[in-house]
Every structure is written in structure tokens, then in C-alpha cells.
Image (cartoon, rainbow, N blue to C red; front, side, top):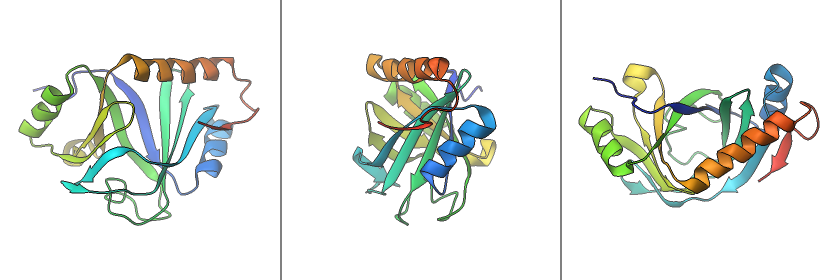
Length: 172
């Protein structure tokens, strides 16, 4: 049975220092500019069924047609990020897909043995499904909606118009 039935729209990495990571990705891959939301607070965050609130910063940019998300966790609150990386460690964390029927897709992943570890609301409903056993990473289900699509288009347009050097880190 095919697990991922929608296009992968994002690759995400946990980083130790957001600004350094944004500059590194820009210099190494021409990725960016990165739009950074510092100490981001999402609504209704739960981790393994319990209310949670890790201190996170997110950076969003593009490398060609690939959307790159960088994630820095500033504390040691249990999270799906700390499930893979201790403070100061870095690496690939998840792929994201936009799903038109969020509840049905979440249920389908769970029925396939991949439970939701983290759930939240940030411009749309989000669930991190634990697919580490078969993929080595999480799959983020992101509810598809026009606002999310517009943000993605704006970040990609900024990348296409960018000179590759000026202001690789921008506040969101």
C-alpha cells in the first residue's frame, strides 16, 4: 500500500543555530532567502497526547523548487524534534505533504501503524506522523488551504527574484 499519496512539498532540518544555518544553506546551496519566525507559538500543541509548548524558531526558504524548513528548538521540552536530535545536534527531520482531507489522511496513517506524535494549528492543522521506522524521518501532514498555498508561492517568488546574497535571513 502506498503511504505517501500527495506530493512532498517540503524537506525539514533541525539546526543548532537558525541564523548560522540560514547563511550556510544560502552559501552552500543558494537556498533562501529564509523567512524566520522566532520563538514561534502555535495553537493547541500536543506531544504524545499531552499539552506541550516547546520554544521553537522556524525558517522557510527555497532551493530551486524545493521548500526547505529549518527548525531550531531553544529548550529541552519533549518534542518530535528532540525525539531525533538532542540540543546542539542537527540533521534531516521530516518531509511535509499538503493534504485536502486532514482527518482522513491522519486516520489512514494511524491505521498503517504510524501514529501522530505532535499535533498543532499554525495556519492550518498539522500532525507529525511517526514514520521513522520505515522512512528514517517523520511525515508532516499539513492541511491544504489557500493561505498556506499563498505563503508557499510568496516564498518561492522571493527565492526566484533573490540575488543569492542580500539579506539571506529575513524576519517573518
